Amino acid sequence: MPHYPRIRDLREDADLYQKDLARLLNCSQQTYSDYECGKVDIPSDVLIRLADFYHTTTDYILGRAPRK
Image (tube, rainbow, N blue to C red; front, side, top):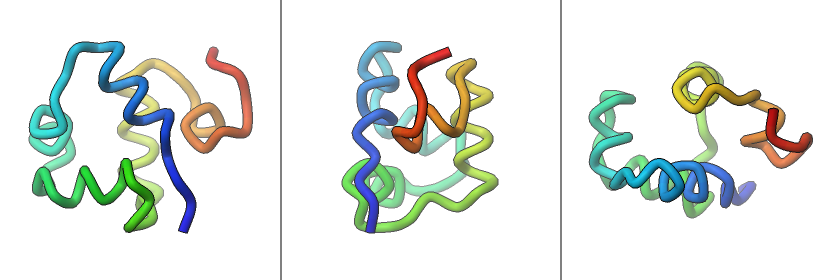
């Protein structure tokens, strides 16, 4: 499973809690935590919503590109 440290960094930079993002994504706080820790792969639709929310690219979140 991949690890997604950038979603944690983006969340913390925005001064948000995991529960805030869970509410936005309509999932539990535990599920969102599992995304951050890489216990669960982020579904494509959730990845796109996160990129849109943070005004960045999915490639950035996946660690494939610098922040845009």
